[in-house]
Length: 518
Image (cartoon, rainbow, N blue to C red):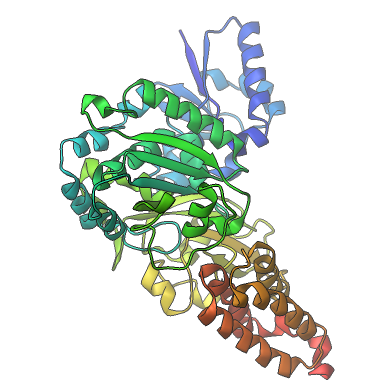
């Protein structure tokens, strides 16, 4: 009888000793003459439990975690290979873990279940069904289905995906491109990486559908250079998909072509902005382009181009398979479907949580995150990356949706949620925002290039108690200039965290010991 054990191969699990765990399991199986099958699956997204080892039983998969290599022998003695649950690391049936069971996984329904590069695993769980349905439709009907879903860009701007696709579709026939922004640079985010490491065929399928929708035959994935594991896994998935006819000159024998390549990013945060990304993809320095023209009209190499985030494209196979309305049935207001939220920072249970729009930050941070890892009270949370506002407790009960957050100056962005306890100095956090911009600015426009440098200097003077009242007024004016005058969102959003500290945590920005200098 074969015993099947699952050990993840994603970056988090590997960094915590997954390879050593596999070696110990194999050694133990040899010593016991056990027929052991080890499947290198993807992560379930429950980062605080990694490496999460699972054993196949008649009742389902039983989970153990977080497992360290030194735990393996004791787990085996306690009945790991039989799936028994009489060990402190035993978690019972994986699907019954509350953190996982309470989620609404549409985009991430397969992660952790499958071997990421197994086409058999992917197709067994309705993989490529969306592509098959797209191949049977004309391009406009594919765009219409995405329009019904209400899908908006999950990379930060929240622009309606179907409108972007429609614009490219309507351009004259000729070379068009699909570009996937996988340069996941926001602090606290890892959802793109999980897709590419744990369910890579999902992104391949989504990009192929996008190509069919707009008449594009070539796609590029602009991948963050700091993701070597994702690069290797995704590259293998592309090769296997091509060999099986899911990529190439005739998708599944349809006569419709779509090819896909990966390009590594330039290591610059600004290349997450779509026009800077296109410049970099063309082999140039990553500088922001002025708009118009829009990339949908003149994008990569001057041709009509769809630029979408990983999560946007990864949502498309479900929409084509189950229908746009099935996706739109989740969510609230103009924010339809689900959002993969990523809990990070000072959090007890960090990981990926996919839920319909409408959950509150408090529910997310307490019910899923379990509060802070330090055990100290929460003080602030930053949503939407390093350019998102720091939100005080008074805003934690607001439902997460694009319009609702925008109403009080919040940013949903890519869904990163970074938590801070009451030991954090919010003045330091405000300074970090300006310093980050000064380092990462492409330098093309003056408000961003010079404003961020001046911002650091002004905050330092305020923190030193040097004419604090006058410098606070100067900082407010500087923030307004950057918001209104910057060429792109890099400079336009950098003031958001600074302004939120000025509004909600003013005592941290102006130290009490500097009172005499005000």
